[in-house]
Length: 229
Image (tube, rainbow, N blue to C red):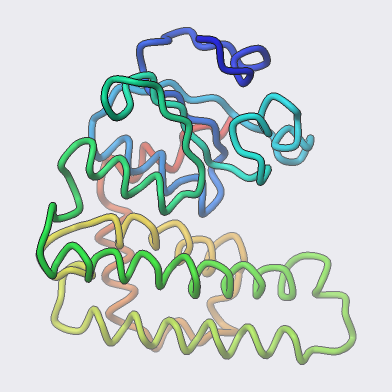
């Protein structure tokens, strides 16, 4: 492999898809998807605390300096493909394997719609709440930013709760990349961010049941541990 990323993170199995990540809410989207798909891959831990995502080798793969990113030696037309942005990677892997995203028709676009909802809404808002509730922002005397993100996170959970009313998964009986994109974020919100009380998570019974179903999946459990150490 000639890509600059491999100068710092060599591939032991160059024939496999290469994952560069960390078990953050965005990072686990791809590791869970890979475990669900059963696609052979090799994982490389990118230590964002040590600023490795801004190493020149990593920036050659993702100029935005964020995890996750992948390098597929067997991309479209049999040519290598480097790809970043977790949502784009989910769509790519779904199309590559023919799993967790309909190939065509209204259900395909509805699934992508909910993926975009996570990318543009739930992820950023939950992340901001985490900053202002648990991390450096918690020391700010002005609690209006925290309260703003808490209220918006609760609103988004209400939207998700309504969608899940009478449904097993976001797309009803069909577990999809929409679910995969959200599991890590909801888990983080009430776990790592310790924000269950501030958003009133106990109100969202459908979300609770959905999260329990998702976290019970063996592939999800494995995916959450990829690149952990």
